[in-house]
Length: 115
Image (cartoon, one colour):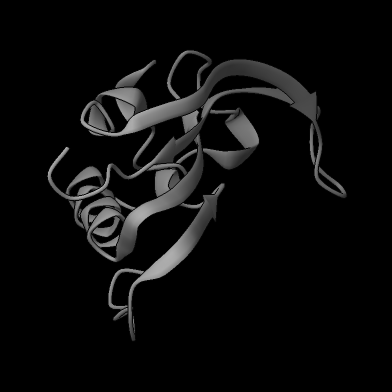
């Protein structure tokens, strides 16, 4: 995703559970590319983990770009936010330790040009 080039603009871009796995400066660039390659009136659905809950011990060093709570919403302040949610959940990976994550989900529509 760091080097992906959008072949054209899209009506819908979904990015779930991956931005927090790359450094902050990198995900900011990726997020800008997602937004820039969404058509006017198009929608982005983005879901990220936040630092509201500490990174699980069994995954230390994996989530190098955790978002701050509500930070994602700030990146869409000029869009029409259709929904925004903070959440926490528990789960475990096969052979892993049960742990908690916190995150934010956002669905936003890009304004039409001139608005």
